[in-house]
Image (cartoon, rainbow, N blue to C red; front, top):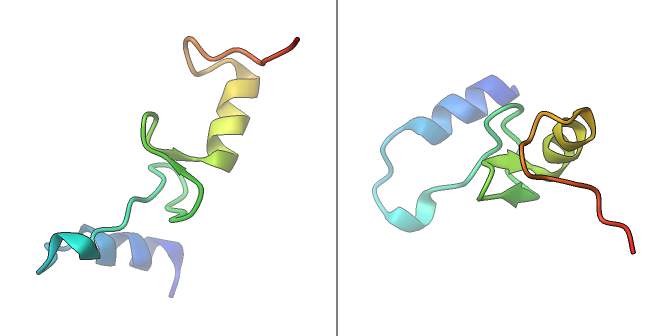
Length: 61
């Protein structure tokens, strides 16, 4: 199935709460999900490098 079809399938009302799967808002990826931002790790990293996520800075020590 394509990502769009999987995303639409996920949006349907589920019988049980346990069936809900968090997905990235941009690409629909189910793994590596960061709940605070609603993004997967790959999209999060891309947007952070572009400076489009306020308050996110690269760590250095």
